[in-house]
Length: 335
Image (tube, rainbow, N blue to C red; front, side, top):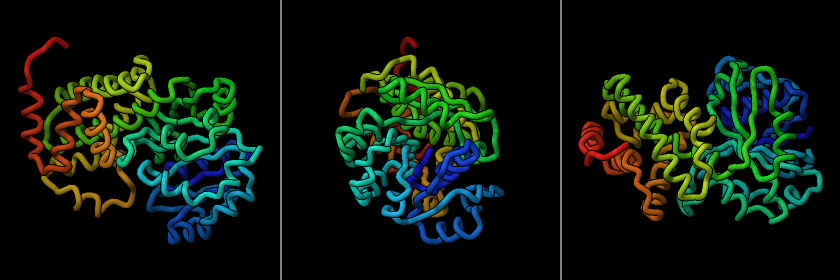
């Protein structure tokens, strides 16, 4: 199939490699001129995927008109959540109106700051009504660095059309990348977004030098908070026991590949958020999503004490040790 990927970050490039090796025709749109030049000349970007050379067959562009000429049957959105709306505003409508386009697959994770919407809801606001049934999300425990090296990985693709999801399973799956499917699109979106906040908390725990007991408690109570918000948004509870819930949470919270965990770790070590972000080349989506989810939880009256403390640590310069103390000394209750 002809596939376009909007966003040449680490995850977009890892998926381009995978899909090209699965036999599909790939064009990747990348806005950064330095990264684009590097990709065109060397078929690699060591800033994002060290040691990985991409297949020669992948084309790279910074032109949406050129992307349109590719006539993609699938468009993969690999742009960070907070940049999806302004990026798609630049896309010519003809790209969306093509009768060849069968699916739009979001692979970013987050809640938009300005609207407090999940990404599927953003896409429903931006895209023509006829495309709404074709909006999907690919999520799960899947670091780009490992997928690019063909480390066995399982993910889930969610949407509203089961026949389309079955087709997409065959497009993405291979011997090292196994794709399950789900009709709980909102649940998969919420799990992918909020786990990044809990991963920041996990980094704080590690940065403070706490141990396995603390981490186990954090992840257990973290999935409770993710589930609470998801259920308030009409998600299915069982989704959060799957790949896009507890699976993605565990991987993001414990892995050295995790940008969100890295942010938390540096916070736990006493560094300031702006200094941490200034030294990072990739986006830690959990930082902006922390503020979004903090506000959304307040709007929906959902109790999320871990999210509350992470918000204060990031945006109100709260001492992370004090944040842990307040979590540990909350009123005693049944589990």
